[in-house]
Image (tube, rainbow, N blue to C red; front, top):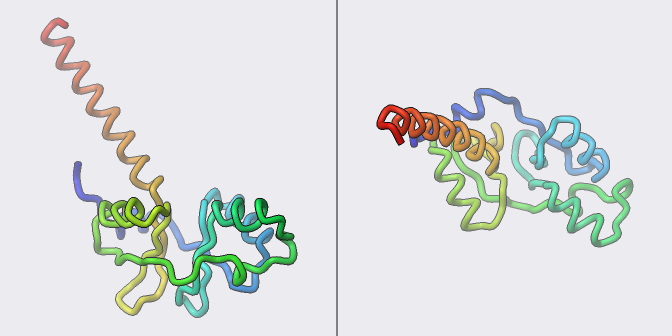
Length: 146
C-alpha cells in the first residue's frame, strides 16, 4: 500500500474548530452539520483540547450533564497527542491504536493546528484498494479458468 501523507489528506478539507466557551449542544450541532466526529478546541490556533462523539456520549449523556449548560472547557480532553502533516498516515494510525483514540490533531512547525485525521481516513482508502485487489484477482482467476 502506498504511503499516504497526512498533508495530502488535509489538502481536501478545512479545519473545523470550536471555542472553549462553546456549549456541548452547540459543539454537537457543529459536528453533526459538518459530518465529523471530533472538534479541536482552539485559542489563537493553539490546541487547548479535543471534543469527540465519545465525550458527548460518556461525559455528557451517560453522566446526566446538561448539554446546554456544559462548556467544552469542562469536558474536552486536554493536551491531545499531535502529529505533523509531513508524516505518513500510518504513523497517526499507530498513535490511535496505541492510545485508544480515533482522532489525531495535525500541527505545523510552530505547534499550531492545521487539521485533524481520523481512523476513517484510512478506512476509506483501504476499501478502495481492497476493491481494486479483488477485481484484479477476479480478472486473474477468470483468465486462468477457475
